[in-house]
Amino acid sequence: IKERKRYLGDTKHFCPVVLKENFILQPGNTEEAAKYREKIYYFSSAEAKEKFLEHPEDYVAHEEPLKAPPLRICLVGPQGSGKTLCGRQLAEKLNIFHIQFEEVLQEKLLLKTEKKVGPEFEEDSEDEQAAKQELEELAIQANVTVEEENTKKQLPEVQLTEEEEVIKSSLMENEPLPPEILEAILSEWWLKEPIRSTGFILDGFPRYPEEAQFLGDHGFFPDATVFIQVDDQDIFDRLLPAQIEKWKLKQKKKLERKKLIKDMKTKIRVDMIAKRRAELILERDKKRREVSFFFFFFKTGSHSVVQGRVQWHNHSSLQPGTPGLKGSPHLSLSKC
Image (tube, rainbow, N blue to C red):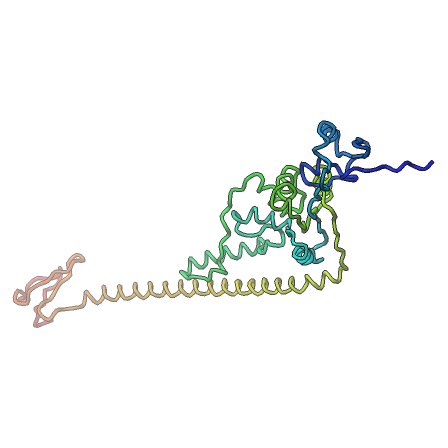
């Protein structure tokens, strides 16, 4: 038996209620259908169906056809496949927004962290951080100012909100975002102006099956999802040269830091030796002055030592036979 042809309503197989309220083309459920003016309408849920049946004239076309929402495309693919380049060029051609999903996440943290978050942005390992710390301590000991690039201190730990902590964890651990955060982010693009009425190309989303499932469960339906597939060799050719240059620069800085630490230790050792030499010379000169003091005579007088003290006498008071030190006669100036 040939199936009777169904005449669909103005929104075809899309839900008219979601189109009217959210400006989104959401496929309707064939089990949630209603007939109005000899045309069949499908709805996304029973609640949408009830709204339509209460005021059907609000959701159908009258003098002019219903306005379709703008183009919304999700663009996905592996790193190095050219998503950003293709997305930017296509958005310029279609005069719609180009949104890089992970860049949006980075912008939410950048004001506090002052740098991008993620494994690819963590340039310093624990060993390198320890080497930088050692260099800073040696520079203080040697009283030397080192270039800021070599002694760049770690940024102070910042206080992130609970939402920011979750976003940071997602970027660091490559994990999907929870539904409540996705709801807040995606609703700005699907439901708020000016993006709502302009359209967009969403670059790099969804990243995980859980995020793709979220789109369908919460009514954020793109018109199309484009997956860019590229040969592995092409990706290697695009990404490897830049990574090698980055590695070379990192190794160069590492060697410079090692040399600087060695030079700093040498300077500290030389300074310590020079300081000790100066102390020894000072002590030697002091002893020489003390010894020479007891054998020095002024031209206008003489002295005698009694119980470790120096007694000064006028020349005129010294007479032959005057007692001086115990057990010996005191010598006159002429005899001395």
